[in-house]
Length: 117
Image (cartoon, rainbow, N blue to C red; front, side, top):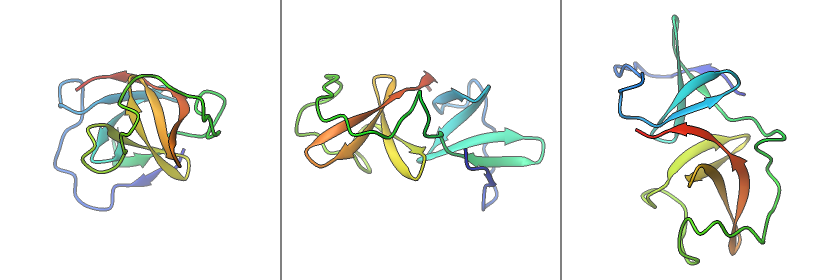
C-alpha cells in the first residue's frame, strides 16, 4: 500500500455520507475520489493504493467473463466504472471486483469490499 499525503488542499470531508464509494482494505476504509483512494487521518488526507496480493492479484485471466459490461466495452476515463489504484496500475470497479484492461479482454484482479456512494 503506497501512502503519501494528498498533494493539494483537500476541502472535502470523507465519511459514510460523503457521496464517494467506500473501499475497505487492510483494516480501514478509504474513499474513491477521482481515481484516487483517499484515507483520512488526523494529519490530513493520504493517498492509498490497493496492494497486489492473494486477494487482489495482478494475473492475466483471459477467460474472465463476469457479465458486468458488454464484450466491446473499453475501460478508461468516462467509461462508467470507477478507477481504482492497484499496485503499479489502474483497475476499474465492476460488480464488486477489479477489472484490468488487457488486450482484448479484462483481467479479474479480485474482489473489493465496497459500500456504494
